Length: 363
Image (tube, rainbow, N blue to C red; front, side, top):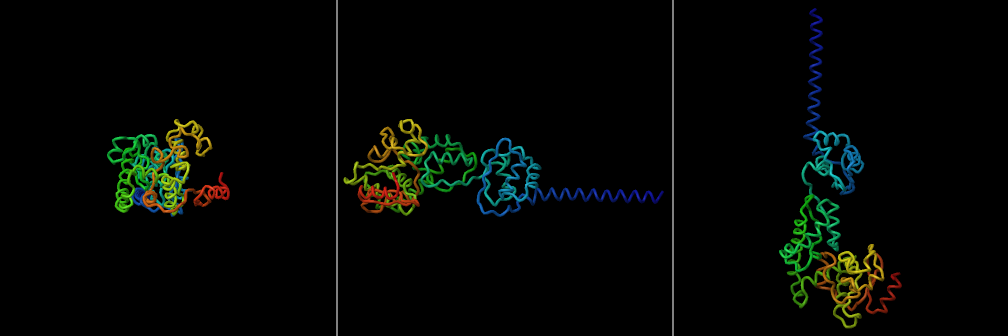
C-alpha cells in the first residue's frame, strides 16, 4: 500500500509540476505578447508607405495576411493573436488605410483599428495643387471630408483673420508637408495652411522688399494669382522665372496681341472645375481642353478670351513661383510651347512660335 501511495504521490507531484510549467509558459508567452512584442521592429522595406484597402467584409486574418505580404508585419498569426487578445479585431478601419514602414506591431495595430485613438497622418500637398485637389487628397488620407474642407476654404471670417481678401482660400493654402490627426476639423486644416502661407509671405516680403515696392498698383492677390498660373505652367523649376517673364511681357507690351491676354491653358481648365455651370463648353469636361473651351467667353477664367488676370488664383503656388513673379527673368519672349521632358521652347515672334509648334508636334 505504501508503494502505491508513493507512486500516486509522485504522479500527482509530476502533474502539478507540469501544470505549473504550462501555466508559467502561458504567462511568459502572454507577457511577451503584451510587453515585448508590441515594440519589436517591423520588417525592413524598400518602400516608405503601404496602402491597404479595407472593406466592410475584410476579416482580421485577411488583413494580417496582406500586411505580411506587403512587408508591414513579420508574422500574420502572431499579429492576429495580438489584435484578438486586445479586442481590436472587430474595430478595423475601413477604406484606404496607410501604413508607414517600417513600423512596430503596435503602430500597425493603431493604424489598423479605430479603438486606439487617432493616428497622425503625414501628407504632402504639392506645389500647384488647387483647393479641389487638396480636398480630394485630404479625404483620401482620412484627414477630413473634401466637401467640408472646401466649405472651410470659403469661410469669410476665417479668411479675414489671416488677411486674405478673396472669396476663398485658393492661392493661400501653402504647399508643404503637413502632419494632421485623422478626422481633423476642416477649419483647423485650413488654419494650418493659411498660417504657413502667412509666415512664408512675410519672409518673401522681407527678401524682395525693393522689387515689391517697384510693383506699384499690384496687390498681393494679383501677384498670388499670377504666381498660381506660373506654377501650373512651369513643370521644370528652372523655367519658372522665364515663364513669369513671358506673362509679364504679355501684360505690359503693346506688341503682344490681343492686348494683355495671358492665353494660359490651365486657367481655362480651372474655370471648368471651379465654375462649371458658368461655361457651356465645360459641360462634358474630362480634364482635356477642347477648342470650344478656348473659345468660350462665358468661362470667367478663360485668359484666351478675357484680358488681364483671371478672377483669382487657379492653384496654390509655392515660394519659388511667388519669387519668380516678383523677380522675373528679363527677356523679350512672348511665346512658349512644350518640347518634352517638362521643358519649353521660347519664342519672340508668332512666326517663330508657329514653327516651334509644328516642330514639337503640338496642335
